[in-house]
Image (cartoon, rainbow, N blue to C red; front, side):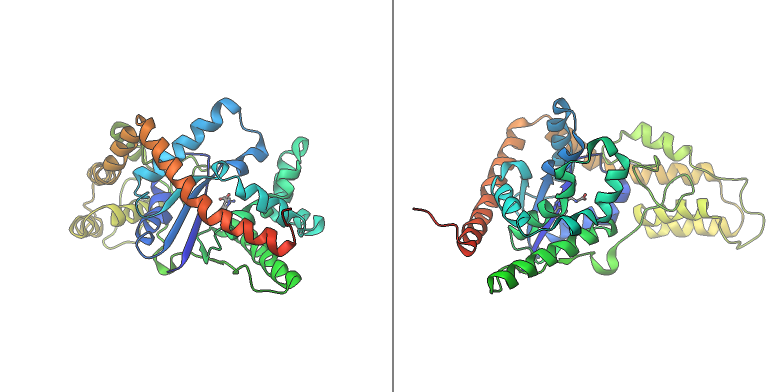
Length: 329
Ligand code: TRP
């Protein structure tokens, strides 16, 4: 069984693109692997979030992942700051992480440009903290997007360096995991290729049905096709792409035929699309509302998760200390 570790940023709400892009695969993966999911709240502190909002952000993310199907019976779910062993490994790994390589990281250079008034050491050593997250459980696979590949590459470099330096094969070199062929990209409702938070074109998993209907109704369309079997413009193709994901095959076929005969009525298509999106999101939304109000459950999940995570983490830290020569009197 592979060890899979997934780090989740504690910002933003989950949307349909996240769900089909990765989250649904996460939930399936839990059965075949030993999975760790954690919320990277320390990482978020590099940008100095408002202390009054930090806990709420963590709670949001935790709630939505649980609601979407991350199962604490199958996986280990924890909050990064509940596992202090991560900090110790981070400190030790930092002794072998060099200024030059850290300063060259793309994400660091970007952040330094964006917040020149706050280029802190946490930003510089972000990759070391991420390496500590991963190596502390000796993960085999790490599901990450393109933007995190360099960080993973650095994790492998740190692992290799440690092994070479101390003359043993202690850390594994983790690989990026992108679920093979199964990745589905959900386009935006505004004609753009991708549904994304920064694009402002999202349908959120926790969104109420009225608001979903409104958004779908507002999606970009035109006067309709003029010729039989004509090619669809991007913004129409996008609506069909989402329809293919959320609706039954016959439904898609029905609208394809109407399109081909120039008989399509966008009002009907949108009504159907909204209805089927709501069918997917409603159960998740209901669970979000349930879990949100259940502080006892969230406490139980995070404390049991932290306990399990600390078991594996403290073993690693104990061994690393020993390898590095830190011995007790
Ligand atoms: N840096 C990741 C992101 O921004 C979050 C993260 C932190 C992470 N630690 C990790 C992801 C460990 C995977 C493994 O999305």
